[in-house]
Image (cartoon, rainbow, N blue to C red; front, side, top):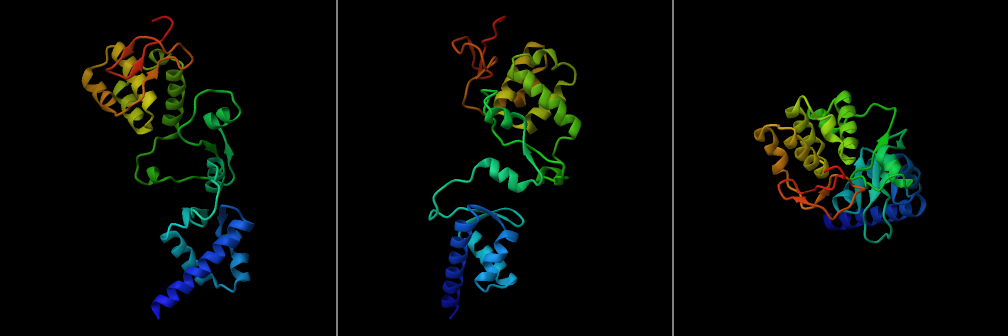
Length: 230
């Protein structure tokens, strides 16, 4: 009897998923799904059960509470990362490096989608006390741009140990290796640099992303030393 009920429940879930994909697309909210559920005679509690089963079976993914993305191989197509960002943040606008790359104003491909919102946002890192404070993030993003342009040595002096800590939390290999290369040439102690050097990467990063790639290489830092002025 239990097996029959489970099969019946799954078939209802698939019917609901088909209706959602056809009418709402591959990204939808519980609020938008509610009229479709009512059309199929589903109570709010039954809807919750079906969504839980669809998630457990890998048919959908829960992006955040009340926001879902279709994962089933039965439905062709891929949800654009910008659409996911917009679903996670309301109101929101795609911004920073993501916007520049989208409009062709930079050759740097961002590793994450960056969006700006006026709403208060609490991330898992904030709950664990590991997120950078706003002033730290602002300083670090400036340093990120400077390092991309090969000008990091001009602003990296001072609290080197704290910069190393920020870099590792920021988690971008190119920036970590460029920073380590620059700090080493500024005479920073090897003990401070060790975590940067140990950070695992496979790619080689040019000091000047716009410069010639055929230049001397630093195996110690996985850096292509292609600055025009050495």
